[in-house]
Structures are given as C-alpha cells and as structure tokens.
Length: 193
Image: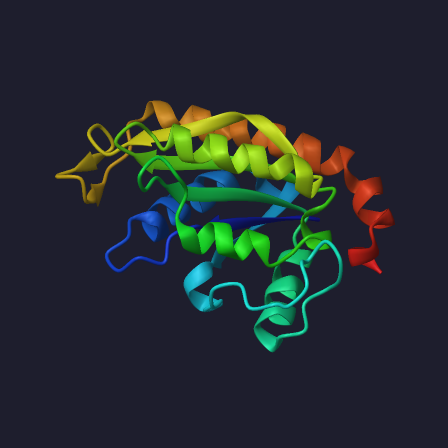
C-alpha cells in the first residue's frame, strides 16, 4: 500500500495547519479508499533544532538522533502532501529547516501542496516547488489554495468552501498516480536499502 505523509508545515502556536491537514487527510482517505494510507506528519512532534548537522545531507546522512528519527519518518513515506501557510511570501522557517535536514529520503517521491494564507500561499508553494526538483522529487501540478478571507471565519475558524473537495480529490488522484509510477525509483534509492 502507498504511504502518503501529510506534512503539517507550521509549528506556530495557534496555527491552522493541524486543522487543514486533518481535513485533507479525511477527504483523501475517504476518496482513495484502500489505495493508500494517509498519515499526519507534524513538525511539532519532531522538534528539529535549526539545522545542526556538520555535513550537508546530500553528502552524508545526518548523525544527530533527531535527524535519524526524522529520516526514518520521512523515509517510510512514498509521497507527500505538504500543508503550508505563507509568512512574508515564504513557507515557514520550520518547514524549510525540516526539508534541509534530509536528501536521500526525499528522492523518487511525489509531492503535492495545500497552502493557506491571504492569497492561498501560492508564493510559499512556488518556493517549495523550486526546492523539490534538486531533491529529486516529482512536484505535481494540482494545488489547493485556501484563502484566509474565504475559507476561514475571522481568519481563524477553518470552514473551507465546498469547491475545494473536488480539488483535494484531483490532487490525491494525481499524487497516487505519480507515487505508483515512481515506485521503481524509490526501490533503487540508497534510502530504501
């Protein structure tokens, strides 16, 4: 079975990301049925300090215990849905930091994005898309852009518009197709050994 990690990209107190990610997970699991397992991956649970590995991840695996735990968690997934807010036109520093900790574990995996912010976090997602290619990830086209004005009451109470349900379904369909197609790449990866 394909394992999809839904990464909650914000660690901020009072964040909306956990509610958005749970909504995505519920819709995705219902839509995909037995085709995939969708798991929440909360950056808060990993408490990664600002990158503290002496060697870049592309050159050698991390040595810190928190890096090894993070690598194991990410390595166990076949694809990802990243749920991200947008802070000053960028993804949260905690998300970028978590991505930078690893290299091999990201390769050969598809990634999709659900963004939330004033303008649906489209600029933050663009920056994450630019990062995906060098990590050897398949960045799929569909994106769900949730507006703080239209999908949240008073910018805080998450109440998504119905039109986003079909968007999530389309995103999941394409993500699963890519995850299946990339299976041989993942199997040949050093991270799979």
